[in-house]
View 1 (cartoon, one colour):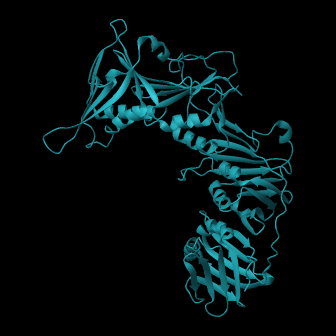
View 2 (cartoon, helix red, strand yellow):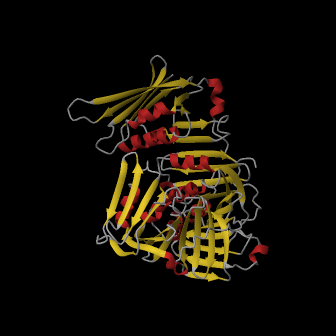
View 3 (cartoon, one colour):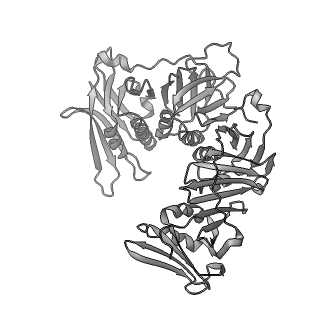
Length: 289
Length: 276
């Protein structure tokens, strides 16, 4: 097994660093899956986080100038690595800073020190002729092939309604205030682009209404609409832990172009973040009420 | 008006219907009396009065006069109790420091047993709230009338803010001395650092009005005066009045961002222990 990649473009490096930071904030460990054409980040705390899952994929050409890998075997030409979030964040912080001060390039290599490591070899700008390097050896666990099945892309569910979310900043602001009132949020969505965020406690009922949200066309929303005969005005609802939603929104270091929200009534809320060169999905199961 | 009421309840007429084009003003005024969560709200033709009490010794009232609202309709005087924390959370749902857009507010109330309904709107996004109300508590009547006022000072809040926030926290009481004779106005604490006096002569620039008829010394528990600091911080002028029993009334004049004026009033009973 071997892996070697090199990033030289300022934007690619910043993008990669911010992505790793976003993902590190969400779970203690994450799985990086390397294939010939794509880099995937998978978090599936199926046991501890009651079923939340994150799936991110980027074509490697969008990040790397040079990319070479040999997987476990020619038929299974992929590498699955388990990374510790804290260690990865420390490494990528060396990549982040303004233009002029930022890393000139970053090489990623699978190496074997006392344990297998993902080595970040970062070249920083230098005032002298000699180049300045910082090297982070991030210990990783190589995931054996028999466990790969745990890290496949979750099925895009058939959903009852879909929409593009309103500006994340606005949504975050409202959710931040609503979290003081209750831990559970009922998200309601219909097929006309109307969304309600509802909370009910003994002392207050509070509903925030978003109207006329854009609706993704079928191509952009995988899975597809189920029950096509359903009335457009009818709301599908799901009850979720508001802190999980907020935590996910606030951890995003990159601004997506659009965020699709799909809802499977009483079962699941699926956020699909569309960035210029990658996609990130967040599956949040509903709370049983 | 609100989507939260079912069709049956919607037919019951509102006792109160108000509209305000800047929810932040209402929020900021109510916030300064949030030293206890449960407040009694009095509705009258003059406006909305929010009263908060503590230990049966202090009472704060904030007046949201009817002129603060673009629309104010009230059928009959009434009162209820409500959780300030929840009310404030609803008023500031579109929070954020920056006033990017004005948040408009509508409030309505149908009477005893019905919730206070709010409709808060910012930039096309609407939030409906229905906050449970409770039967009103009987509030203390401090019986503080202008007729019994012995001493009165109107002072600029700018300096008073500093004095109040710098009171020695290790002192249990603050002693107020007011007199037509020198030293005129003095506040004293008795903490670990010893006795600390702050004296302000009547001719001082920061004193706008000085009407003291007799020499008075009264002490108040510092912990009970602490809730004064919030309204004091946002006020421009403060009136300090004491009556023959030694009760103190502090009235804070607050200039809202719309340049309208509102008042917060604060009453405190003297500390029984020492009366010199």
